[in-house]
Image 1 (cartoon, helix red, strand yellow):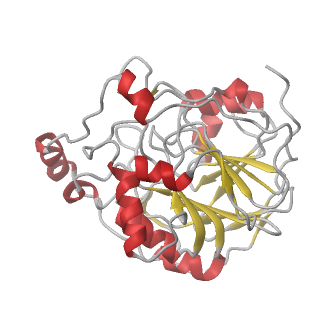
Image 2 (cartoon, helix red, strand yellow):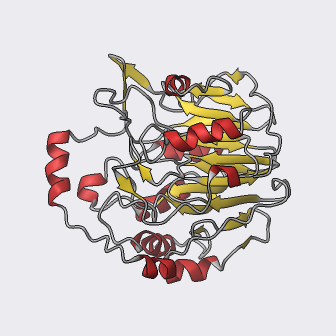
Image 3 (cartoon, one colour):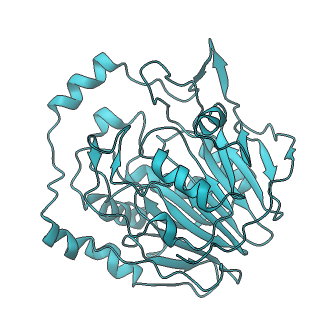
Length: 361
């Protein structure tokens, strides 16, 4: 593969936190979720086992029609013009180009989201690219430590290819990176902490309503977060993985409006089981409104079968609830794996007809 383009230099120093909302706190070495209480395993697991599976994921031939995977069209140079360009690489992984910066979120390009690659939840749609295909990266945002968001194979490959890239991680997560030999340019933040990247963009760790666990006894020893990247002209919000909470109104009040947001719309069904950890499409619309997003790309769907809703339901319900809320037809959209959209230019354009795509799926 061609040599990666030069990334931005090491991040600048952290700026003082803006105490405008709830800060994350530890008790006995574990972070406490101030928004909801995670159901106990004994309550959750029986409901999970008895839930009806409505996913109905078809054969590959049918998937190639309903959820085709496209090879990303990388630009000759990172997009630095008007607007924000986003490419969906599957699940919660977005490749965002904004004001000359290349940003990736929760990168997972592996076959499985699992501690090992010979067992565990497997993709039903392949990754549209691999690490050597990615031309440039300056910033990586990590929302939390679950295996479908913090993937060892992808992270270590990215670290080798882009050694000067800045990693932004929630409190407690830097130690995991050190264990993988990634010690440079790892910036660990609490909610509402802001950090000035060498490019001048401000990266802010923000609240979300979730939990963390990667091993047998490390529950909530690492924090979870959403993120904002604030440039001189454009703003991007990455929700990560979350249930609904009041913090999104605070985020919109203090850091909105956003040109683009990436908000999860899948892995919610049934909500009687998953409402304490994942938003559904109706709640995704509420988050879009709360944070004052101009445009939102729906993520966290169509890649791994983690829950039981019909595999094409998330974008359709998102479209319906956005219409009920009175939003413009293109305010919230999806693209197929590997496709890109350019928003925030005053004359938005995408690689595909967004409204037609949402209606189709």
